[in-house]
Image (tube, each protein chain N blue to C red):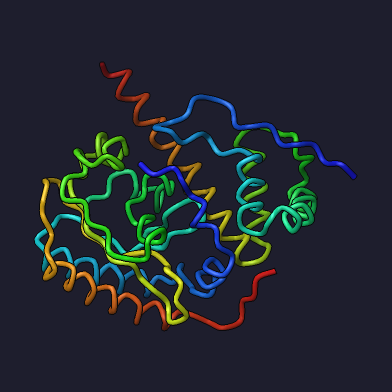
Length: 173
Length: 103
């Protein structure tokens, strides 16, 4: 797992995230639908739409068995694969999480059974990475460009939905 | 006025994540706002939560998180993070304890 959370705490990025009404039930339902479609298109059991906060990942849309994460609504950022999307700003693919030097000691891998991951960043119109759209598998899997294109299409749908729940009033201070 | 430095969280970590404490809340605010702004914000939040800053345990943290949730939207996001971390810690601790008891 990656314990470096320093790049997640940017005030401008968090200010952008604060402008979205992430608690809106209609938004959750719509983002769940995006996750369901992506999971079906890629044949994977789990798909998420996430927002990465300063020290935790917030699941704002999901499909599939999430276990304890369904109860907590998210996970510490150290355990969140999508946090890497904020760190790098580009797609993050791990064909075999158990063999990955960064993720093999992540409890979501060795405890909960996640075995593969592919995610793309959700980037706001003003350039901030809000979080990600991803699939998680329970078997190792190689993902290609066509798979990432499916994720990008889902990500565009998710961003379009999120924009409907954004206001322009919040300012940091 | 010099405020007490929050004590670190107590207890064993769970898969590398500790039980969140007031110290973690202060660290998060430092990281987001910078030390100077966080130092100004900290006593405001403690006063709203009716805490001295020296308390330990989850009830104190939950009062602070409530005060943070009612502050600026970015501070509320920090509280949301702490809530997820606390619930994750509690949930996985409970599951693991149940598993150990069943063995």
